[in-house]
Length: 154
Image 1 (cartoon, one colour):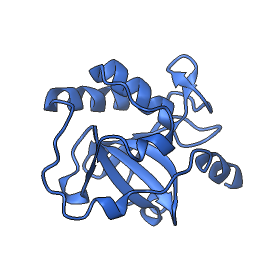
Image 2 (cartoon, one colour):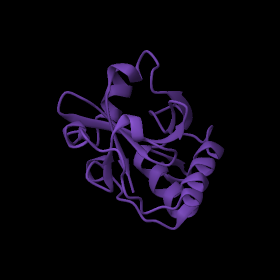
Image 3 (cartoon, one colour):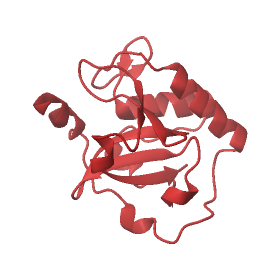
């Protein structure tokens, strides 16, 4: 558990919840079809091994490597390579306006610690930790519900 937390905090910057208030309609760089392609590609990578610094299915993924690969391959949209840069990428989205293909940026206190791709129905795909693999989790699970989450739309 301690190793997991250490790895998750490797790419830290403040989450952006304070920037989300009041947003209902957020412009998107991706079409609905591209957002769906990103979502399906992310789900298709569930089970790929985690590897710190990894950015391909063959080498494994860390959280930002997974996001970068899926957005580039699924929509042709390049993303920043670190969680600290993803925090300010795109537009903030309120929880009630989040849609498939949006990013979920997690944190505790003032540090962003992790990121994943929202895939609908309260679920997200992410590459969680060393020794693990890309997986699908619930935002309301015991662990993730204790994390501060901000949503970003490319």
